Image (cartoon, rainbow, N blue to C red):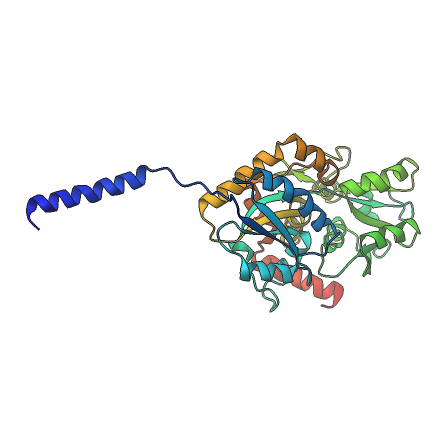
Length: 360
């Protein structure tokens, strides 16, 4: 090749590279495609209802309006479905996973367990759906404010938990940080726990915002139920404050300061914050597998953003979402990491606490 030919070849290569660099990125398009939605819970539960609420509206806003098929794969505190997702998900946006708080607790409390065959740190959260929580008592413990909890003798409060390594343990941890050790009744699901409370077999409990307003607020007016604190809600800077759905109740952080005279801190509180992001901010959500191209991530981010502003979705979602907006985009990913990340010191503390409290 002579000099002239080399120059022509070089200029041609430069022109090709320049053209490729200048060309706009190809946007994801799901026209004619079917998206598999792995739902790691049984039909009819809270996570399943959230999935079936969101999916039809999301499909309308994804480019190409794809068909989205929900596949329930229940078992193992959502671990079975999560393992399936990790093993089978394609990295083209055609497989997504919906989750609820149970999966976070399954992972966070035993990330090295043999049954855990997924790494949620590699996944990309595209939406988190918060649900606030309230702790309440009846008249039996003899307290009317959160500040008085610090004076309740150990074992006086009787509260339900579904399982020692489930999401209800945040209730026990909250009470211990506030100065009292509750007596747990293990093995009650939400409906069984509410019935037991109404029968007087329990004298305290934690409930989500929607259920509390529907089932418990009428009893507040009668003095039969006394709400003491909410678990709180972060502002735009991430600082925890009062839950906007319960503006008259102190947040957990406020209650702690009222009792102890200082802000909460230390390993136990670090655990509490992981549980908070797991159970409140990430009550429900959706993730993509790791390794998806940016155009796929962008497509989901934009679709959720559009869906969250869609009057049709807003009306349909009133009962399920309450007054809590979806957490989307980078904020969803940050919230996801907050819910699954524990330092070695924090993990050691929670392991020792669980062994002491439940001999596990």
